[in-house]
Picture 1 (cartoon, rainbow, N blue to C red):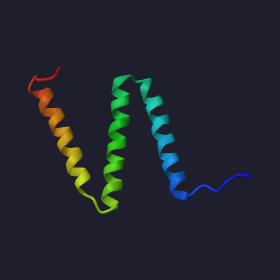
Picture 2 (tube, rainbow, N blue to C red):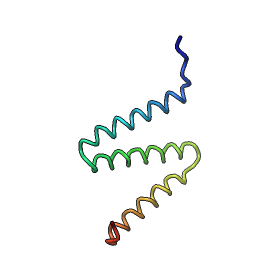
Picture 3 (cartoon, rainbow, N blue to C red):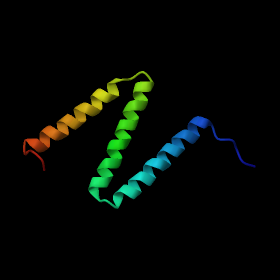
Picture 4 (spheres, rainbow, N blue to C red):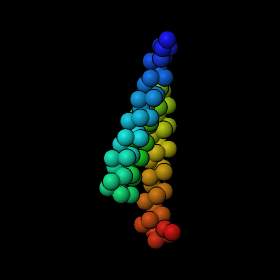
Length: 78
C-alpha cells in the first residue's frame, strides 16, 4: 500500500532533486558551473522568502555578494 505524499513535502523533494540535477549538470562546467547553480538557488530562496513576507532575504544575499566582491577586488582573497 502506498501512502499519499503531502503536496508541500512533494514540492520540497522536487526542489531538492532539481537542485541536485542542476548541480550535477553544472559540475561538468567546473567551479564556474557550480557557482552558477548556487547563485540560481540563492535567488530562488530569496524570492521564496519575499513571497512569504520576508524581503530581508534579498538584503542578506546582496550583502553576502557585496562582501565577496569587496574581498576579491581588494586583493584580500586567499
